[in-house]
Length: 213
Image 1 (cartoon, rainbow, N blue to C red):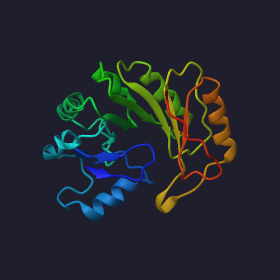
Image 2: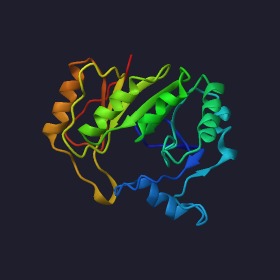
Image 3: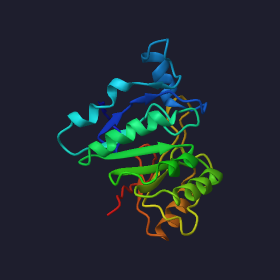
Image 4: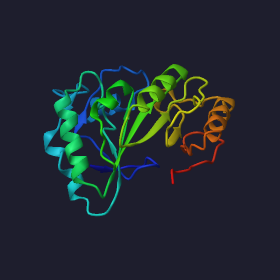
């Protein structure tokens, strides 16, 4: 596990790494090719020896699960995901944040542990609508959507039923800022539904970092 500068969590935990989405802005791929063994690279890999790491943390912590992977990608065996969930259930003092670009698999693991947050990434409206539809089916967990990077105008659909919204800019080699008008529209649509909004520090011109009650 590693301490992190991500504003909304304390640690990252990567019992699974690697991804096949192929996003051209992916920071994780660059890190993997630089620091992982060449035999692993950014191919999906299960680090079974890391499963027990959260148990060693005595103080409650917010943990981002698989910042170097998409744990719910179609290529990830169910066995790997269930092993991760076993650790989550064994650590009720911690809060575990999951985030995926493949939200259709999230309901397959109902009911979720109550200390888990199920999240989906939405970079445009099509992904937002898909994320909302699949998160509505998730049972047990808090639900959130991350619009990072925000690559197109996006609003929160009516009666979205989520608990939290993250917004951020495109970072890394292709870094860029979304239109302020896009951000304002998204924030307004969230406020209309009383959904707390957390705007990351990488997005200029906005100071809004709210948490669910």
